[in-house]
Length: 339
Image (cartoon, rainbow, N blue to C red; front, side, top):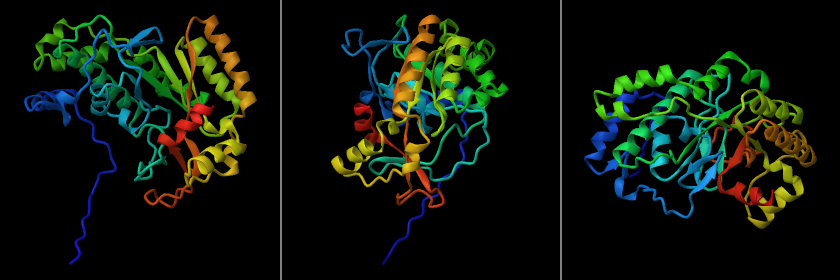
């Protein structure tokens, strides 16, 4: 006798208001867990932890975090990452086109990772609202746990894309402004939560969420466009800025040698992935220019290594209509180290 099991999943995000998130947290706390994570397994920071570090002139209680992706798109996932010890929280990439249709399923993490998704699946204002909910509730949890330190210990890192024209559009400009100062929105949410947690009246949650950003550009973005965006973020916005670079900088011979010959991955990286991407000498020139600009503007500049790797869709799970997918996960680590 054969049995067929069908699993139905929604392909839409349904957001949860902050007061319901808080009640979810407090209800599960009575069972010794939060968002299904048992309290005994959660990370508890200590002032003596040897791995504490400074990034963007701020304390990080751990040097690890989560990269921009679906897990940093909704408030409860951001909070869950923080509970497990992630302190560098790169928020899901925001772009001006905020009504995109994303192929589903869009992620395969059977071994090495593949995806065919890109920016946020929410409207820009809804994305900001999720980040603000997470920002407030993490501060609330720090207070509930008795971690009343002067330092936050974590960073919300913005991620934007994908070209200068889009970043200068009103909705992305609004997002950047609100991440800099969200007094009105934060005060409104505090008023909503006070009946559930009166101690909020005594918490001084900052209106300024982030002063740092990671630039995500499309595969094949011209080097002069990347540099223009970087200079805008550094010189006009005065943001601590990181540029995300592609693993194709290693060149086709080395990428294929590492992935296919040394590690045995059955990943096919087409020639076009290298042809239309930034080249190594162009990257070095751009890095020098942006480093100089950052020094002149008293902000920090860095790199994120690496972006996903464009490859042919040979997966069992992602829709075949997607001819190209983007390799992520552990397959990228050796490429990043070599780069």
